[in-house]
Length: 389
Image (tube, rainbow, N blue to C red; front, side):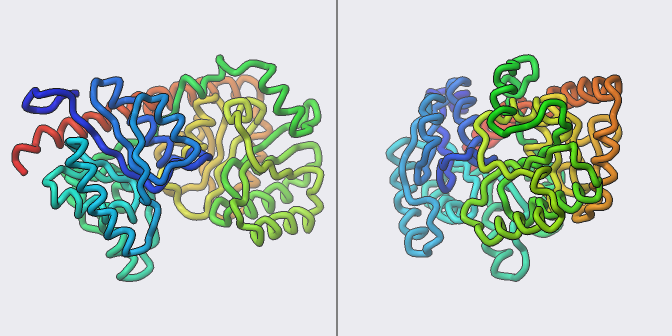
């Protein structure tokens, strides 16, 4: 990367609320793009409230600036405009890329004042229930380019915000295929997890990864498992409640109502998801609302695991029905139970063919390298236009 006028490497500022532990799509994507910027010869800065992942950012040779970007307080957001103007001028920022609505309002006005181009990434559908919500969300369409993390999100932006197609760039979330590679996960790692989670030898395992929140579909999954009427399988709900104690109690009660205490287990946290996928026979995404992309579905396929996802959102772009997995009716335990039954009855030859197809599919279409390359292309495209501002 270099500035269009050839006077040195460009400086890109990414902005997000925080770099908290857990590493969701926004946080992880920011770190991965920062690493791509520095590898390509640019200079990467990130402004956020900080968090445990700042260490990962510095390992990517990027610089972190601590600012109160997570605040939705109007006064703080207003003050953040001045803070960002000062940062843009002091660090000679060439382009700003923002990934969340509250900091996007501050970034938009800071870029207006400094005449620095803005790029936004639309990570989800957000709530559009009323006029004020839609107006608040609209800032994510104010970028010189608007990156959509799936074709589904791109269509949502066009339908609900009238963004012209030529302004949108669909760049799917990227899977780290170096990390999520079945050849690189040792048997010892898988055995360690199986022992920690007290999984009996030979028991088929189905897993639903995702934080404990209603729209992720844990209740639908439990009801579907109950319909199988099998006690020889194990169902793992991997993800913490993040303070949603009432919903956690509801999940526990649903498990007890069906008498599934020995079948369904909640795992609050997992530090080795690659190994978790490897010990699993089927990976499920039962989201009742459409996922913008669906990282779990892509990661599981990268590990050669057959997947079951609900038939909406980004899953329609990542799952090949009948080849790498199944799509089921959203919120329907009967449909999910039928897919679980079919998946658990796969013979070894079919499972092997699906694994090979899934791995090739993700590596060809959804790699981290592709995501980074295409994002840098957007940066270069916008930087080349800067003289026209």
